[in-house]
Length: 187
Image (cartoon, rainbow, N blue to C red; front, top):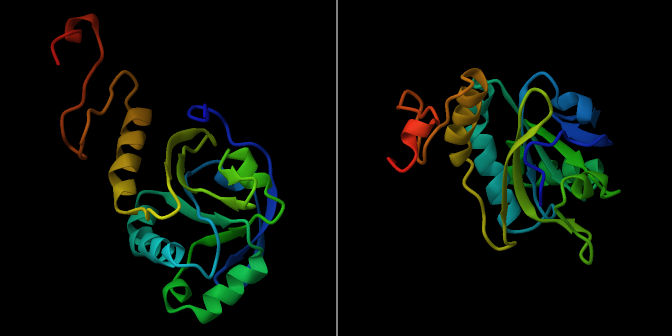
């Protein structure tokens, strides 16, 4: 998978968002930071815990200038039905994209062809529509949305400070590194 540093591919899809159906395309990912959270299917077991956890981080992500999108191969109609019937999903206020054509899942190389469902995958995309991080887990392993905060802060820092990089476990305000010949073998 060589998606890091590549621009997201074109797509058009229907989505459910705050009681309405809307159209979404790759153009929505330009001009701001974005998180795309792929998950296998609505009305399942691990998925609602992840989407609920992502909602719990949504206000903080919005403060960082990040928009959040969830994607499964279900339709936007199924997203609405799930939103209307699940306590965990009813609190979701970010955009829930339907991908029944599998175009988006294929574009991001997360489609499990034989199942017609997406892997659990999270992508951070910069304002140019370029993929900066990818995380993919096995179907039974839920993700922790709180880990997105530090990753996004690091990605934003690196974007705004050319020539600097963030070391492991970097936190906002901590020391960064300036790669140079002087650092080789000294870290």
